[in-house]
Length: 383
Length: 101
Image (cartoon, rainbow over all chains, first blue to last red):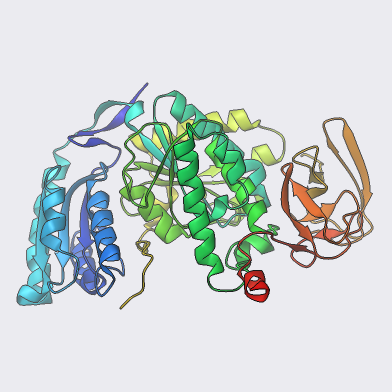
């Protein structure tokens, strides 16, 4: 099956963004000012990149590189402070294999100079990006990440089962589906393990879940209230097991072909599990770094956030929320709730939406620009 | 408009989920496969929340999706609200680890 996209050296994009990415939290202001001058460019600011343990610094560098390499990105301006732990030149070097990348440093000659130099570069990149045109690309090049957030009881009964059917359709078309949220597999791992393609993959999944559970338990408290969240509980979800059993419905029925680390790019096609937290701002970053060109996001209570370089399609099966938060919900599954549409019919509607979003349609989060705050998931302390 | 008041996900389940705000004293008929339960609610059940289809004794498992979602911390009567006040999780219980060690 063919869809519309941008054919790049390292994959197929569905957007043609110029990214302005801070390498460290302290450079965020400069990156933001540059994007204020050229709002067509996409701002990528975060709070990491310095005074962290070496494994975390390496992880931040990897995630920055992989975000920049996401095929939805045409070219990249890195905005560095200068003295941060992250090595901006090393990051730029790795990006340069696939696309044009430049670096400006605030500490070279101050903010004003960084803004004027950076905005000149971004103007040029935006002009060049306009010359690139769409072409027909094969659907099998598409990676769709699936996430659930601000879940309630309708998530496990309606929106996640619909997303799961779409996951199966994507994989049947030769594409890739990434899911994560390790915490939200606790209590449902025995079901996913049966779908693992071999023992190694099953073991990798169990290890990731055990480590996440141990980290949660190390605080010496019942994690309920944090997971499930206060909102989940208000929405009728009682335990992490219940949340997980509803959450894994979104993975469909395909074989689990691999388990990958946070922010890693899958090397296989099919259903992929990325070890990642449930919180939106970190999970979406991991998926975008993994090269997902589109993210499906099911929600019960209404989670509005998107991601700067990846269209995020919001789906809900809670009729009251779909009506109240129409501004944020892209695919309204109320007809399924009322028994007027089957799960399979809704899945076809959602699949068509993916094709439209790939080709031309902007998601609600893109229209609203609800996409500024994200974070990189690090495991060690700030030191 | 669909008039279903509640849904059961799996035949093994001992709870159903409310598809509307339901009131104490209300009669609810809910089916899965060939099984039909006629339940008189003994608590108000908010939209999306669960009520018991069978009596669940203290320490017994609460089943939804055909799987264990937790354990009753009190006896739960038929038609009673099943939620954080009478069900505990069996996983990531750092609090239990602390007291047992």
